[in-house]
Image 1 (cartoon, rainbow, N blue to C red):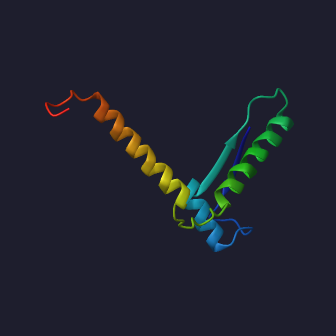
Image 2: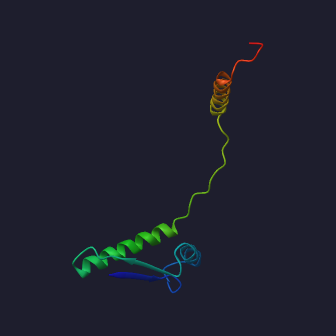
Image 3: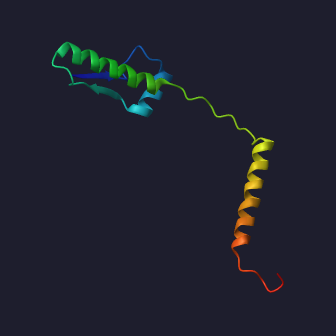
Length: 98
């Protein structure tokens, strides 16, 4: 069973919602179900999946808020860099003055 939703002809969605769905899924949204032996169950599954796809497409992602690294995380980063440098220096062959 296949469920089809024509986004452009929909009266249930606002223009902004239509634009969002069409940019993510296109002008026609389809969902297919063939798991069950009964047609009614497959229809219900297809409609469920169609609703899920539309719901996900209509979701507005939260805007990202820029944050600064904490003082402790900057210190950890610098300490790790020092340890890495010391580790590499320890691998070197000793020079004539050592």
